[in-house]
Structure formats: C-alpha cells, structure tokens
Image (cartoon, rainbow, N blue to C red):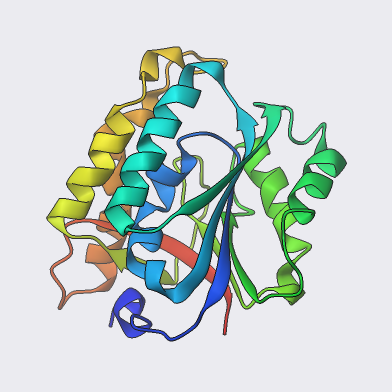
Length: 220
C-alpha cells in the first residue's frame, strides 16, 4: 500500500513547517505532500532560507497559485540569506528559523535530507534535526541533488496535480541559475519523474504515473 493513501484523512491539526533552502525547492520536491496533507494542519508555514532576485517575483506568483489550489493561506517567511552561504551563516540561519517556530503548539517539519550533495540543503537538515525531539512528524524530501536517498513514503499524484506542478516549475527561467556550471540541467522537467521510477519498482500492483518520495524519520 502506498503510505500516502494509508495516512490520508488524519484528524491531526498540527502546524506544518516546510523549511527549504531555495526559492523553487517547494515546487520541485514537496508539492505533492502539501496537496495531499493540507487538511492535516492548522497552519502551513513555508520558510525559505535564501533569496535570489531573479526568482522572487516567480515565487510570489506561484505562491498565490498554490494558495488558490489548496484553498488555504500559507504563511511565508524568507530568511534573506544569499544562496550558497547557509553553511557559513549556520548559527544565524538556525536562530532565525527557531524563532519562527511556536514551541507551545505541536508541529511537523518537512525539510531536506542529510544525504544531499548541495551544501545548503545539508545545512538545513542539520538545523532542522535540532528540533527532531520536539516535532511530531519529521520528514525529509527527495531533491535532484540527493545521494543514496532511500524513500519509505510515496505520495502519488494525479495527472492534474502533476500538470500543475510542471506549470509552476516552468514559470522559472532556468537560464538564470546561480550555479558554478551555469547549466541548471537538473531543472529539465523529465527529471522530476525519477520518483515515479522508484515507485514503479516498489509497487507492482499499483499504476503510478506521477509521484514524489520522502523519508519519514518520525511520524506520530
């Protein structure tokens, strides 16, 4: 059974903190979780550690489209650090993120995985893991930079949801990537179907055309 189906319909009413390194990480890696679990949460909080001038306006437009899609307000926080400087500013990023979390209320964390080649991603995992014992759900996401990612949670997506996801991703100008290679090759739209290949290999009795995959460290 696909775990995303198993846990659907939960009566949990926690606060969700999606903590990502960059503008576009949400659209690329964890949109499916948000679409499936919106009703699980009292509040949805998206905290992005860095900013990038060429992507700001696209993200704001995508955020409005996403709110309309789920029918719920999303609380958005940008910590304002430059891309690729999160490890250097580790303690400042940590302090900024922890101050947003309300420890008087129950919360879940969705963030990057520890086995990720992007140093910004790994730093956010380490920051988030400091809240592991305080969270009810601690989940990491698959990204194109993942290495040896071993998923144990799959969220299957409808054709409509996958089309919505691709439209959001396509709104970004991939020719303006702040990378050393300047290629931005990991933004090719076909790349996001890799989770579906994993799913097809693990669920022989389910027809899964589109999905996202995650690793659950903790789920209450």
